[in-house]
Length: 76
Image (cartoon, rainbow, N blue to C red; front, side, top):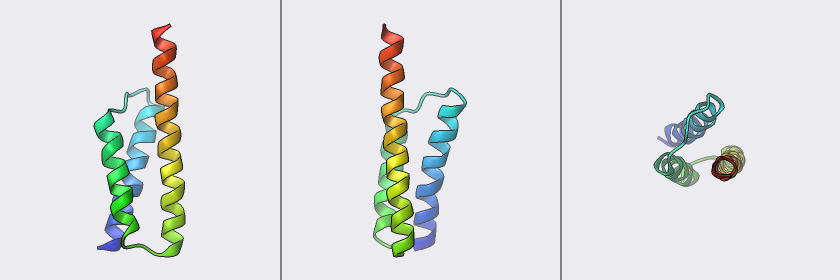
């Protein structure tokens, strides 16, 4: 079970970043779902996986910030 929570979190972040690279817009719901997947995985993972989850959180936050910046640029 713990492994699948970890895999779900990793997959959620990867789907978002790959979609964004293809030019797709990431919805707030997708962002929230990925954050929740990460938080769920924290409860049942190894120390090594926790480090990767932290990296996934940073990647997710970076994607979110990049998307906000793009939206602001499009408004100009």
